[in-house]
Length: 167
Image 1 (cartoon, rainbow, N blue to C red):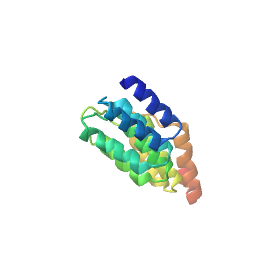
Image 2: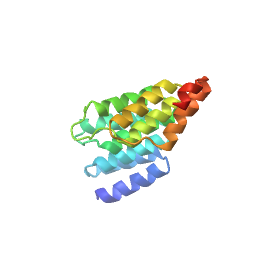
Image 3: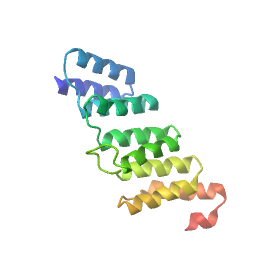
Image 4: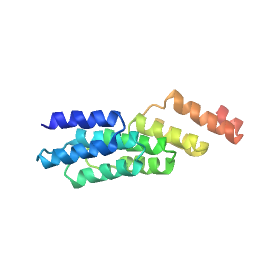
């Protein structure tokens, strides 16, 4: 049943076994068992943990095409994966899609999404862009984490912008 397949796919995800998780989805489909949001979120997570951002994005994009509604977890996992792979522009693009309300039923970005983008830009050495997203996070009513504030300060210090770091 769907619960059993979701459990197996989720176990694969926890181990970063994206190919194995995709194989279980194919097996699930061959048994005419309909995957749901949890199934796809586990696949997205498996791809993210395996460092395969393109596949994580592909699964997120294909959810709606297959009649499955993405949720906040779907997006936040892809955003975090992009940030982890040092691709802040890509992470920001997914965050902007969430903010634009491009997917019906998906709430706006949560603090985790914003903080992933902030930290990604800070690690990339773009302190101003990281600070912009930290401000946007606060204006959206989400809370910036201590790690995000620290990352922005460190990015400004690395740039030699001590006055900005002290603000």
